[in-house]
Length: 319
Image (cartoon, rainbow, N blue to C red; front, side, top):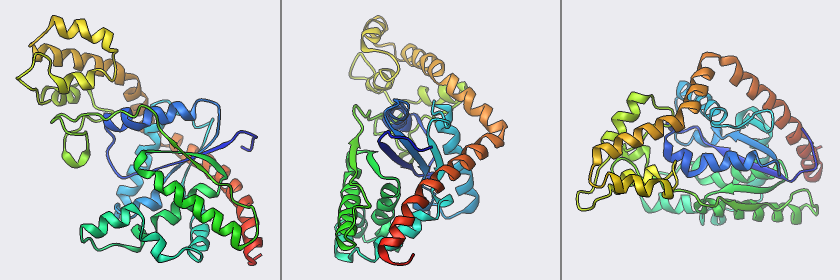
């Protein structure tokens, strides 16, 4: 799967149950970007990164499978991208070790994730400390030109650039390209059923592939503000799937009628999510589809990464 298009690399951790906040907040925009035709895309399940929080083998296998199914269900065509597991490509950890030998501890101690953990007096694992180096290897292996990230992960791309520059300087080579962050535009902050940002940790989510009954149960428990004529938490979710021009007369007509507005939201959410839910359920019935996607992705990512590692090994003198 080699072509002349610029390379995009993106990794997604299999660490949580997916909800509509994940979809409207990032997944939908990611898939639109992957499908734009502008880039050669390497998309991977970041299962080695996930080991920092998921330390149960069956859970890791289940969440990995669910993540692959989810991206296919929401519209990602695995034939148009290289979709693989990080753990299936040994070059990720090999290159991480090589980068470890030129990266100092004081430099890594400036990472936001490390400083946050330290501020909370957490006992920090080597994996958490070394996270930016593995991420640099993930990105630099494939000559990524852009890496789609949220604003809070921009520092990781800066680390990848710094490490690439340092390697090139030490070994007098130009093996590694310097990637640029692609900050996702118009990233939605989706309110949960309690009005806070939707998050599994808050227990306030609407599952992405929820059944009609589950949707009804979740929406009917959305906290409403009795001080206004428009239930703001209901409206903010509703505007993710219908335009404000469409919603304005609807909410005016049913001013103060919160139950009716919630019922309308249930109908619209169910209509919007139904095709994705159907595709997800179809994938659950045929395990071979996910296996084939990951097997193909493994072959393509392995070929691309080994071509890069041959140059790296020669540069450092181990080949």
